[in-house]
Amino acid sequence: SLGIDGETLSVPNCSDFGAYIGGGWLEEYAFLQLQPLMNAGNIFDLRIGLEIIPAGQQPRYGHMPFGEFDCVFTDGHRLFIVECKAGAVKQDHVQKLENNLKNYGGIAAKGMLISAFPVTPMLQMRMASSTSIRYVSPEKNTTQNLKNTILC
Image 1 (spheres, rainbow, N blue to C red):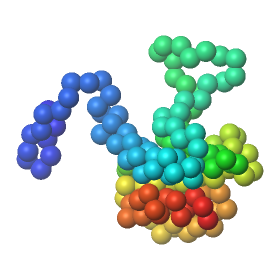
Image 2: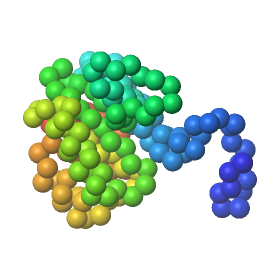
Image 3: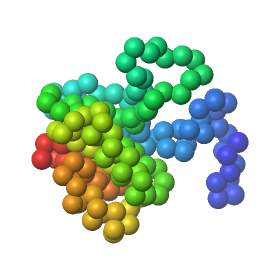
Image 4: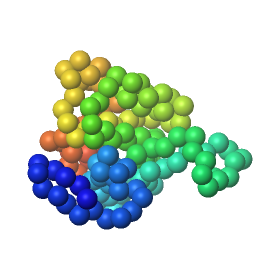
């Protein structure tokens, strides 16, 4: 069971519930906001929880993947990597996204950082000055705003 504000809620007996409540819900929400854009042909190859495994290796049970993207898609020309943060966003989260863009997407790759809570003014300025990352604040996480962010 899960206790919130003095209420006890029954939760499913599944092994990944903790991961879902810890942030998986935001990844799924972002995916569902992006899905209409794929259905309309604005974006392609939309994936959630894409795991990276080095070339030539097979995924093995019990082994961690090399990396994982919360959501990823293309616009037909470049890779977009979406990082979702259900808790506080820190500088190292932005740096990780920038590194993933360079390592996996090349010079034209774009990143979006979607957060459940507003970020600090310093991080807002940091992302606003980036040529590759766009910050999507909680109130802007809608299909139309994501479409405007992608097509800009």
